[in-house]
Amino acid sequence: MFSSIRRVVLWVSAPVLAFALVGGFLGRVNAGEETFPHLRVFHDVVTLITDRYVEKTDPDKVMTGAMHGLADSLDPDSAFLSADLVKQIESSAAAAPGDVGIDFTRQYWLRIIATRDGSPAARAGLRTGDFVRLIGDTPTREMSVYEGMRRLRGAPGSKVTLTVIRGNTNDPHVVELTREAVPTVDVTGRMAASGVGLLRVAAFTSRTAAQAKAAAADLAKNGATKLIVDVRHTSGGSNDAGLALARLFVPSGTLAKREARGSEPTNIDAAAGDGSITMPVTILADNGTSGASEIFASALLGNKRAELIGEHTIGRAGEQKLVKLPDGTGLWLTSAKYLTPSGEPLHGKGLTPTVAVDAPDVEFGQAEPTEDAILDTALERLAGKKAA
Image (cartoon, rainbow, N blue to C red):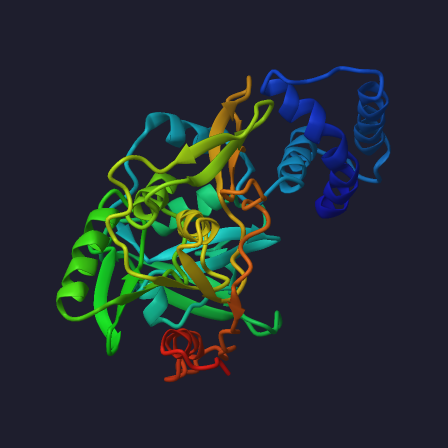
């Protein structure tokens, strides 16, 4: 019953209130003549539902559904937050130390962007594109990305159960994960072929650039003259950490542009002393390459410092902030977005690979393939061979 009410309200409210409410709380509403007819329609719909629906409705639930629908009409990271979640953000309390290694986006339910290397989620076989229908017993249909990520955290050794869908929605899989302490090593290196070093960047934190610089130096000592940087299924983290890593490779020019509402894009430029790593670079990416790793890859691509091999990236390069509402609830809004060095959209669009190579599909419970077509293609190109 309530889902029917919600669909009606959301159908009307999403396009109507996206401008009026969100813009209003950001101080940017233009209350022109076109706004008021839409607001009157919204008022009429709510009135009709509360007065004429076959059963008595709860106005608070109707309006909460409308607010969720409003946020759903924006990007996946924007959300309507309950008062309890707002208090969590305002408290600045550190997240619990245990995690399962998942980063989420929203696509009706919460959807996995990526799992961190060696994490409980990765060992359980969870992959980019998997939908999480339940966290414990709680449906994710109206759960924000922020709330979903907080629910995954807990004390190391504690457990969390996920109901996961891959492919067939009639065949959900229940997966129990044990939380572990978050690893402190973000970057590892190895020789991938003669003269070719491979840097695997598993996460973007304040440590990442320093670890990458040290790992690249070790590879150079071992004979590397070319470098592959692997940011496949690397998601989230600090956007500033993505820019810091890019500074190691780009000696001059614009690394990215940052655009906020109502202002011209601001250039983020390389500085004196940047570009200490001079080896030719190839970047490996896939559909799980997101956030800071996209900003990093975009900086190198835009300055002709690298090729991109693999899949189109997700296009998730924004910054969010909390806008608190009078009743204690809030809007978690994307308030700024990143553009490529040339000013093309990155947030919402992603990066197109120089050479497209699809990652294989894997059935739930099936082992990952031993062959790595994306890495093999990169090695072939570096060796001067024609890629298959």
